[in-house]
Length: 109
Length: 118
Image 1 (cartoon, chains in turn orange, green):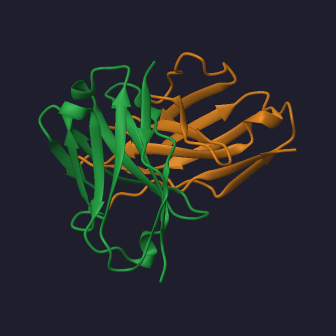
Image 2: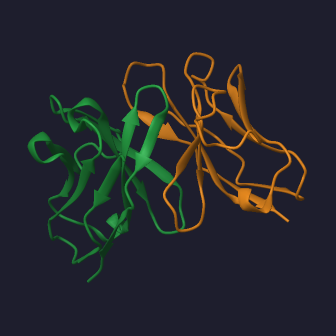
């Protein structure tokens, strides 16, 4: 079955840039999405179609994709950005199902 | 305002059956796929499957195919997730979410905690 691989944790100081990666064989052909989940809350989409930001999402959040890796970048990370982040995509085999990456815990302190 | 409201927490014994629900409002329920996502205690998100309420087209993750059943009733704007025989390993929070074909899961329910314990 298809897998998306993320680092378990990333840590930055406030104001620094955080980068969270997501690796998947189908990413050259398929879009990546990114979800933020704060403790005890439902997830929120912060990036869709590799690099687009939904309305209401801070400009600190940006996304990119190159080859088999997608990257979520949080510029000038704030304490309130501390959360779990999940990438999300589909495989290219035509199986028509989607997967989440394992998640990355972002610590801002 | 788009809302997805899920049924309340459940405590069940192994082997029991269960059906939880997700009621949509504030949009055309029949026009958007609804997905179900599992989150086991302290773990990540897992995509279980999706249903299109308009025609009941359903897709499952291979990991959940045969383990759960996803259904919907567009007349009451509600999607369902069902188990015929629960296991302790089904203990988790289950989220429903509306799938926008461009943005992805754009609206989420509040989650339903299912606890399976003898």
